[in-house]
Length: 196
Length: 196
DNA sequence: CTACATTCACAAAACATCCGTTATGTGAAT
DNA sequence: ATTCACATAACGGATGTTTTGTGAATGTAG
Image (spheres, rainbow over the protein chains, first blue to last red):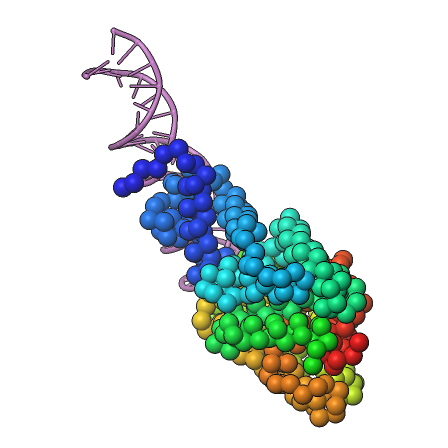
């Protein structure tokens, strides 16, 4: 029975990873302290030792999940449209881990829409994502890769397309394998660019 | 205290309406028999009188919600691209009721992704929606309103755009008022058509 | 270096609450 | 007198939280 010393934050990360696994498998409706503890091979005593409440436990797990994505290095890609494409490809559920991450976020929407604080947090996260998209759109426009149009609207449209594709891919992974996700994204970007 | 006789199905519809109201306000995480009963001004005894279990109660409420949408008459619109636009405008959360309906569906995704049976049902529903979109796309293509392209891919792309726009509008209704939803949709359809 | 006290990192168990379900009661209509 | 349409109340189980116990590591005094 391993003893862990000192590294408090590392242990909280271990717990959060177990939370991710339970969420990806059973959703927020199946997230119980006992399920997380079992997933870790521990007891609820461990959880309460590191988190004052379940709400804090979940909040920390989601914060870490978002920070992990934000901290991931961008895959090398040319600026403008190429960077936008790379950013979206990193988000789409083309790998098991990306699918699990997205499944967690999609699952979080029910509780988030019921709680004003959580909803505000989600709204801020998606606004930030749109802002990053907007930067790429402006660069692409200045490079002549995209026709001039309101960058805010284009960013919102791109985000819409990506989010909806994520949802569909989660429900019908067989109909939306990675290649088709890429093809659909490229098709969308091509229509945005005006290519036929 | 009103007594209701005979009209069994009508009463089940009343219960389902109360379920919708609780779901729209508190999500699936806040859906309890006691909450539904209170919403109706009744007790859980009424609920168990009309439904054998909570699962059946929820399933019936969602079935009715979907049937209500399917049974709504199409708003008058020309065939092809116009019909596609009308169909999507009817789905987007541009009215309080459409927003409440969509909020329920989005909230249902967490439980659906955790249960293979529910996931299959959702996948079938969205496949059906894509099929309706595909018909409009083919008509629009034959009318020359849309360029030739794989109708399945176009339908999946359109569905993606609509779903993602719904999610964003639910989290940031102030940033996505009905006019902007319409503008974004029209902008997307225009890029699909190749208009600049 | 050793004995002991303290702290740390949990396990174990108890607790109160809430939930879905079931059992029972009740008044009106038939 | 029976049935219907509920209300009322009870029940067992699950859940988040709190309390208590415990063994190892760590510091400390002699």
